Image 1 (cartoon, one colour):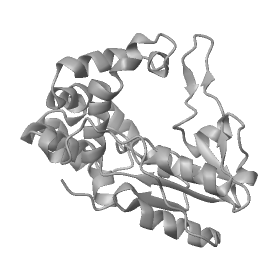
Image 2 (image 1 turned 180 degrees about the horizontal axis):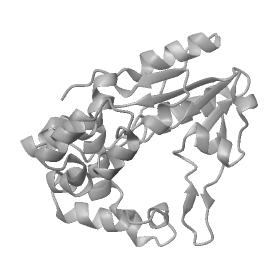
Image 3 (image 1 turned 90 degrees about the vertical axis):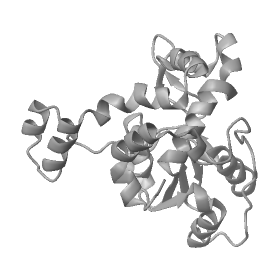
Image 4 (image 1 turned 135 degrees about the horizontal axis):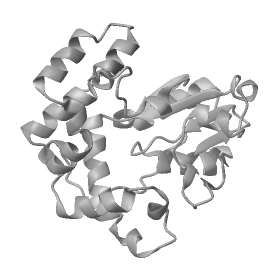
Length: 248
């Protein structure tokens, strides 16, 4: 979802696993934030067309929740997280934290095609196997990686498509950071949030609460990785890692 604070001209896009629930709570309680949309937008089969928690600014325009003219004067911000760390949390949520939702047939996990099946996979497979399942084909073989590196700066998209080379970089948070004025970092969340509010002219400090913490996961995300999964993530998300100077 997005949170709009009309009094201070703020628009916040909630990116997954970036402390967004805590920021949402702070904006609602302290700055009069409104949820947009207030409910999920579903298709005729009950599956998500637009998740109320996580979507892009362009999706808001598409579903007429906000016009470009209305968005223009707002200070738009979102958040990112180290992809290595984010993936570890994603896996633990599927493998453990969210497992109890499966028994509830009306839960949101049943509205995301393939999500419950992936949760079942995580329950019986390692993090390394899960990474290979989702990103192993993108990592490809040495020949594919060499070809992609050779064509990386080329604008000949038809040639790339013919050779099976991606025409766009693989980004974890690209949809959430596109067209944003400010991008916070999960690793520096409170300080970055303070800067957003200062720029918006909020005359008081707002403390982000600690909520929705994934207690089931290990403190150090590096403990989940093998050499194989580290190399896969490094390759697949290399553009985002480089852009924001994230390291393993």
